[in-house]
Image (cartoon, rainbow, N blue to C red; front, side, top):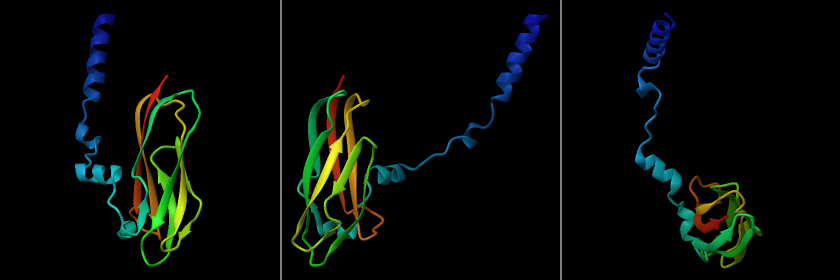
Length: 149
């Protein structure tokens, strides 16, 4: 009797869980995913320049120190550029500019640091620099490292 009851209970649970799965899955178009991973640059991208767009940190230890890089940001335009915000794709990466307004022809420093603690294997992150309230970033920095135990 218990065996028969357990079989009936199994089928009731199995049939109850067989709902329309399409209501639970939201399909996101590939173009939308690509635009989040690599957003298009704003019109100010022609004026704001990073001295490098990719930084290879090499092999790091996960219990090692924070890795720091200093980059140069220049304004090749003819009017002031105001850095409105700097974002990163991971909380393990921090980026800070020493100036929020870069005059034409001037250079500012961008300090980027990566904390490898808790990240094992190949790591790739991005730093997005936004100017003058633009919706899209004006510069993107790719940061790559291979973290070992």
